[in-house]
Image (cartoon, rainbow, N blue to C red; front, side, top):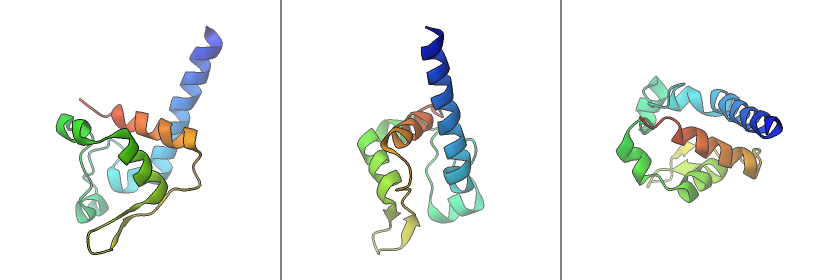
Length: 100
């Protein structure tokens, strides 16, 4: 039981560290996307229940792994293909934790 709790806690810590390192600059530490860069790129507010409802896990996973481009081909988010599948899934779960 304690081993499972420790493993889950470590995964949450890893997701938080990955968020801080890779995502917070644009999406904000709190997931609101209200940074200067986030505003320029149109980052969504992950604390908004509608944004969360509209965000599908498979789309979030794809965006993290492959990055995002605008309709005219401008890079909005670089791919984070150095993250493992497990780290990406943990990041999606972390994004879900912003929902209020």
